[in-house]
Figure 1 (tube, rainbow, N blue to C red):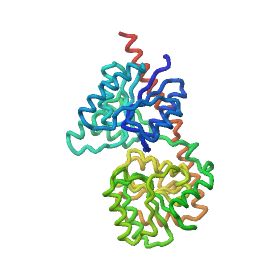
Figure 2 (figure 1 turned 90 degrees about the horizontal axis):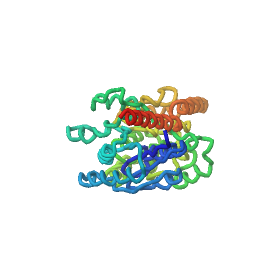
Figure 3 (figure 1 turned 180 degrees about the horizontal axis):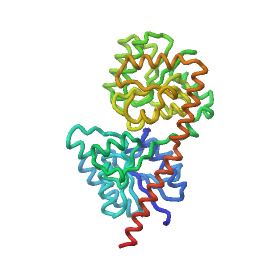
Figure 4 (figure 1 turned 30 degrees about the vertical axis):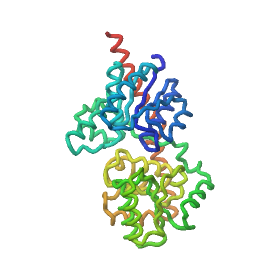
Length: 385
């Protein structure tokens, strides 16, 4: 098989798990000696994509407008022809509809990664989501998502490939975080000396559970803990203002920091005495939980979704009932008050767990193996014809 060209399609290349995964796979594709093209509306990760040797094509793929989606079919078709694309890999619903049609028009394989449950409260939403189950195969990021696809979209299990998301263990490594990076965050976030830090990373959106953590902080009634909420509101100013009012109303203004996006997450994890993922809806995978463990940090996450597959309760972290303020407060106390010896044991177990099961290199190789499988199948069909 000659070196193929892989086209990945997603709305934009801003910071996020879907976006970072696309960049990681693009880099792995180039390192394998293949050509990688990524189509999106652009964003902060384009520079990193360029450094990997992949090619970025800017298209208005971040829209859900039906007319724009239809126009994107022609745009993607032209890219497929001009770049000699052999396989299309879609990572999000609106651009996936365009990519599916364009791939069908070109007669080339179409693969998807199903990144979330997407919410299927009515027939229209389920129809809209269904494009993510049209991949042959469809990649699921967790067993939870694989089960969701089979149950809700009637995809035969043999058409699924389970590939958990992976962490860059060179970037998320305690040994690689220099003290000056942590000191910079201490300064930026105005953290007091010698006070335990509780970190909740994640965009400011209600289902990520920031208000649950704030209520748990209120219940603790401890003045020796500082809570950091790291993530952008991405224009959801109503919710971010609600968080600010809740913090003020609960008398937590001196104990909760809302710091926006953090560009140095490894250093942020190293600053944390405990990391929290308080999502009230199931995480498809739960990147925060895995990154925290890779950095040897205690993790408290809600007991549903992908977190059940990434955390070993009692060994690498805690699982608590979603939305249960009391259970979260108890787990916070347990985590913050760990002895030095217990903290070291947990760190060793957590780091070993992630390195054994959630290495980015393994994720990339498994994805490339899916590409090889699909392309070989396509070649066999073409030869048979």
